[in-house]
Image (cartoon, rainbow, N blue to C red; front, side, top):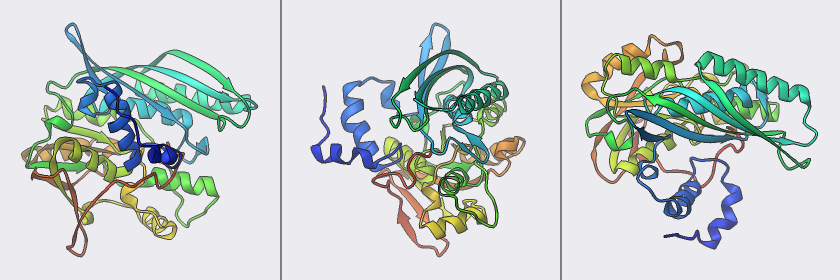
Length: 343
């Protein structure tokens, strides 16, 4: 069964760059999922959990179109490796193998390509994954924005119980691994040549280490979600809408460094919706929250972990933000992305 997207949605596709937006969600729900309907897609997680004999494997894919290609704290190559490793980690898997497809624009400097490849090599080595197959294509000048990279990844699932939105339960605690908004603001400032008093670097980093530590410590993780396109808000909203549970989030508890907060106010952006590349959510029973925070605190990439909210119960699939002033508002997806070409 197929379900066509209304014409007015097609007219607006170019306005929605990346995931995390309401239009992108409609395209997934009305076009792609009906066309390829199966139980693995229906989980709406960062990757698919596959049974292969006695082994359970996680499989994921993503594409990277960031502009500029190089930015403080990373580049498109590091982003591609870390992003794929992180999607596998969110499935409770140990990342093992990657593929890469390179769409190269005619006229790209070989030195730039060499720099990207070397960055990918270092990132893969740090994450202990192997890039085992690849492909290249060249497109006409002006058609590729320098480089686009598509990746796929395979990992071995080591979590004993399924990790994903379907496992979220009322009463669960919601943990955040660190401050938000660094990646998006870094890209924005690098792209437009803006300078702020406190320089920022992207938080781009592999997240498998803290996830594997949580699993090794026997913590009953219900759901993990890395907060890339659409940021913290989109991650929470997507889980809530998938499961039908309600979240209550304490705005005061969400860590945002002053440089990100100040730049967001100046640029008219909401930090809750700004992309991250080294932050993730952990949802697990409240009784295990303190132990999970202690485990996360042992890992450099998650040393700023904190509790930001809870699952209040089965409801309408809403994410409620309790503001610093005590008011409450429902978070919703934007029609498009605040910052296009960001990851």
